Length: 348
Image (tube, rainbow, N blue to C red; front, side, top):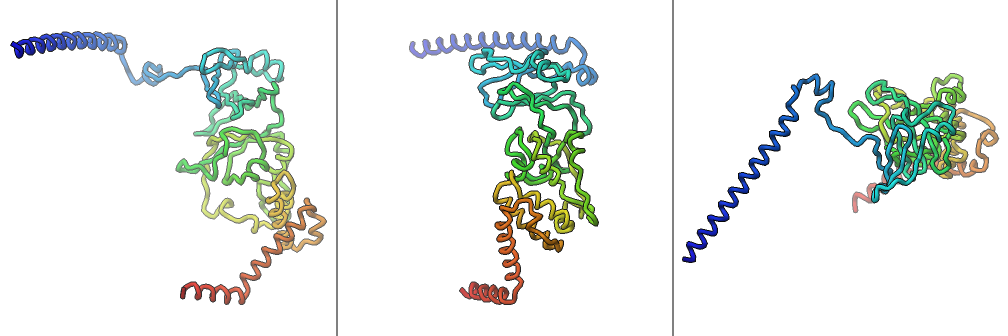
């Protein structure tokens, strides 16, 4: 009797399971039929997929998280508004058409902005308008830097600098330590020892004020001399994105030591690099290199022509240590000494 009751209960559960399974199958067929009818009520062709965008992915228009991840912004036709992520509450209006019209003479409106990005501290916002693609990753546009804290536009930024890549898509040299920062060539590139070619776009009128020095019998000079001169007065916007693809020729200028090849220009370059805001270690190093190239060029009055006479004695000491080391390495005594040390090391 017990076995029969157990069998009966199993039959009940099996019947119930089959009813639920059949019901879910009918629901799935109904949903699939509804979706299929919606999707395929119109004929899909390559033209309406790619040209008309019948099937496409869509994002949230005008939504952009801020660097801190505590807030986000919503971009509308007339404002850029700030909201709290946790509550969704409106916080403040960062920019509006009324603010733009009172702060700039250009006919800049919110609707003309193609792209905007915040600094890491969220105190500045970079506005990009009238973006026009030139070739591959290269494009041009108008850049505006707005200081949110001071409620004003920065007018002393004259350059936008980005990264370069080679033909294989590899970044040339170092990436910037920040995704977006405002600084200058000396304090950022030189003092932080950021290596590799970078892509710079200058305001033409400003760049014309800083022509390359003409040096007799020398065809080239390090471009950094111009960047350093501009850095004493103006700022640059550094963006951690690829701006340009570079191709290098074997034996080209970038692969040559043009400091040695063009010593008169190098003397001028390192003399100008021996002053602040270059950090102290670089001032001493550059002062020593200035002395090295001035001696190579058989110059007189090296001290009186030095840009930084306070650092000059330290640079002279560094130069003498370098020359003394080279002289020691080239001497017969040094070679005999190193050979003896090598033999002793081998016997041990």
